[in-house]
Image 1: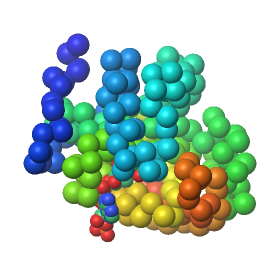
Image 2: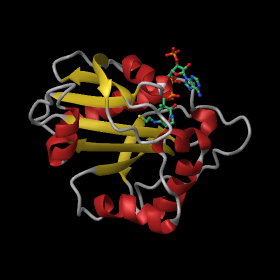
Image 3: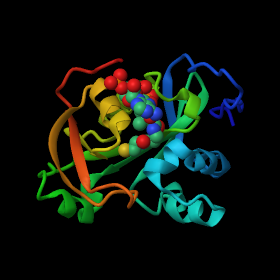
Image 4: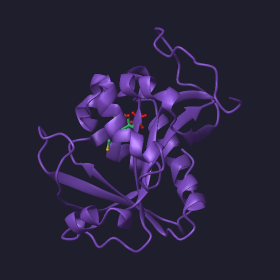
Length: 203
Ligand SMILES: CC(C)(COP(=O)(O)OP(=O)(O)OC[C@H]1O[C@@H](n2cnc3c(N)ncnc32)[C@H](O)[C@@H]1OP(=O)(O)O)[C@@H](O)C(=O)NCCC(=O)NCCS
């Protein structure tokens, strides 16, 4: 397909952080083995805590991929090379999460949340995450015209994640207890937010 870049082996030693524009496209069936491999990487498994069997991947990602769920899963590419996953959803499409976070933060109508991962471990810690997140923010404003805020809770122990949000222009607006994705973590979370009227940040 024209919008599918040729596969690039990012597992080769010394792979540099790819240059170029950050783009997103919907996750497709052909991407699932790549996604499973990313989720199995220790630095991702540590926080996402996903099962990676084909059945589990289909259970967790199939419904959104088939449009049976309102959340969206997107492959993030840099310069045409797939490097990670971006999830986005409207908070109020998942009322149970709005209810869970209510003691910490009142989620405004139309607000969106994102989640993300960089698959190849050698591409982390190089500032790629903030670039992907900053591009994701612009994508949210375009995709959800009614959204005025993006609100992202992050396990407080995942410093790389909330620092990447801050580098992309988010600010911490609350902290409190939420159920962690990985039960080994304590429930303490930080909640980060960016508003539509804030100037775009291009790290
Ligand atoms: C979270 C993630 C997207 C951040 O992207 P990134 O490209 O690594 O972000 P950066 O390179 O800007 O690093 C962010 C900060 O974390 C630090 N950091 C990054 N990786 C780290 C690591 N493995 N151990 C310790 N610190 C790390 C960086 O030094 C930087 O700190 P600074 O802002 O004080 O300089 C990426 O690390 C990742 O995919 N992690 C696994 C999945 C995950 O945790 N997803 C988020 C779930 S909420």
